Length: 285
Image (cartoon, rainbow, N blue to C red; front, top):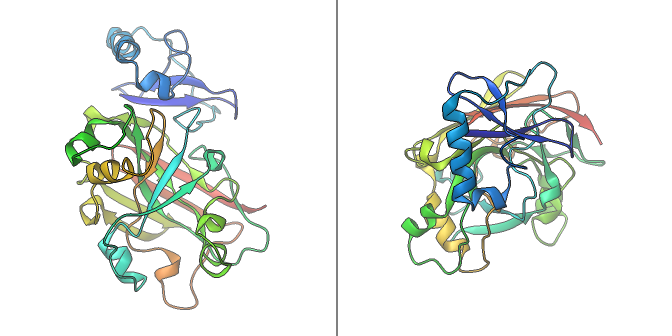
């Protein structure tokens, strides 16, 4: 299923994109798309049954905002340097263990919302990523297979980053990762049963129409199941938590000087086939 949330920010309603590409209202079936829903097999079954009848109300998508496909996100765990090609382009050694950092849930915006270039920023960068949405509690898992079994679905994430804040301003990466609007998510949460192999997904990103990233999750150093297993050794993952699993080569940081960092007026588009496409215009904060 392709689950999403539509409407004004803070007042989104749950919806479903059916097999014919028709947007349908789920508000008569469930309250929201969130961790509580993803952990409830009966509620997910009601959605599947309702979708199968073809009788869910149709929503007019004209002028209707698409919000993040997941509400009440608990935490966003991010994996750094998780692609062989990205490590090579930045001159970093592939990590022996996953690099973990956190983004605040309030960085999340819709897939077509405006992204703000922070005040004083000169090195705002792009990163297309596969987001993993947790559907079952994960705590001290023993295998990658157990990790995959905790995944409720997948989405496109844009892990926007400010490289000066991240690398040159001291401390941890958090300064460059948690600026306002720095995690567009969606358009859909695609349930795990529709993704045959999370290690066989293409990721692409364009800046002002120019292809910058063209990668595949096959390049991940730590695959999805192992990432979930590993993270569960250090923190408990709950339904509705999100893991951004890293970005492939092609970011501005890895480009020759002068590096083409983002400015107000730039337009970034990104996609993972089957999971949807995003588009953001960048403006000054």
